[in-house]
Amino acid sequence: MNAQPELTILLSRDEIKMAVSRLAEEISREYHDKNPLLIGILTGAFVFLADLARSLDFPLEIAFIGASSYGEGTRPGALKITAEVPRDIAARHVLVVEDIVDTGHCTSFVLEHLGGMSPASLKLCSLLDKPQRRQEQVKIDYLGFTVPDKFLVGYGLDWNQKYRYLPDICYLEF
Ligand code: IMP
Ligand code: MG
Image (tube, rainbow, N blue to C red; front, side):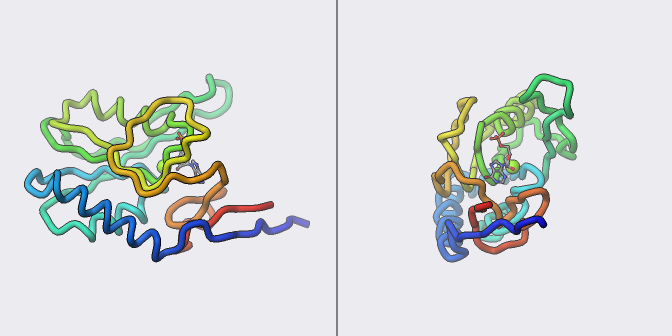
């Protein structure tokens, strides 16, 4: 029989809401007159980007980009773009929106990829930072929370595609 993992709340919806408001204020100060392009990394960032964008009250645009690891047989950590950003980002002020920076591979790969497309500026906003597992250095310009080395789900984050819809961020115990 498959035991269901237990969920414990790490960050409640109210704590997340306050962090999103704080980040929105910080981002507004820099971007209010820049018509920025917010690019969410699929799929985990979709909830955070939706809440963040609705907390910003100046002109901006939204797009998504997909990135994932290659299948078995290639070197570990090798990544590919699975959904290209459907917009010319040259000369745009781009703010990448990520759910969590863990090892750092995915985010730095996406930043490098977008950086090659001549944006006017390129910065990173991540809701969560799990620094204990970092392998590649990533500069997070706007950060919600630093979190412990636990497996997190909810608010966009999944375990085997499950739990993305939960409004709180929880950790899984098996
Ligand atoms: P990276 O290890 O920094 O490359 O993270 C790659 C992606 O793995 C993140 O953008 C998340 O979508 C996902 N991820 C990392 N840590 C967790 C976690 O604790 N729960 C769910 N997804 C995670
Ligand atoms: Mg992600």
